[in-house]
Length: 167
Ligand SMILES: [Ca+2]
Ligand SMILES: [Ca+2]
Image 1 (cartoon, rainbow, N blue to C red):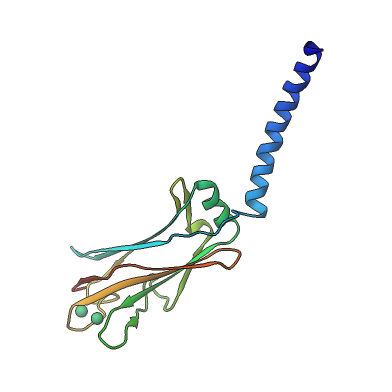
Image 2: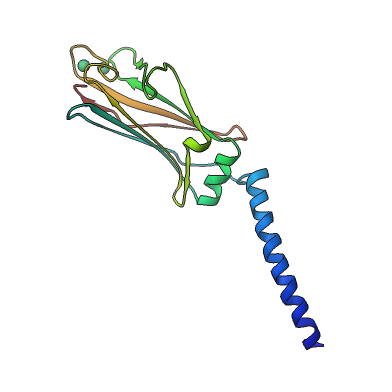
């Protein structure tokens, strides 16, 4: 009895292993993760020797399986650059995408699914006195707003701290 059952179970085990892999892949493609993302962090750095280098990082911590599932199913991140002012803040044109003014949407291959979650990294080089020079001739105060929207319509908003300087 044992001798005749063991090979059958071994073959069945291999078959299930293959089917299990296929099923896991299809779950990612068809349904995505069951839970909504709960944390979003938005950071930026502005360094100014020569051209002004502006880096924006948006991070949603989760495992890689969920991160890739979200991305494959059409999750997106909307990004805006703002200039902080005493009365009304300015939505800055040409930031984060030069030549484009307004909310910029990133999705698909623009997002990275990694073991630490979903990442969006944006790097731009600007001439001094242009895009990030939101107060002329005064110092400038830049902050970033990001909105994560998954394929179920769940929204998570984050705002970076403000970076001040003469840009
Ligand atoms: Ca200002
Ligand atoms: Ca300025």
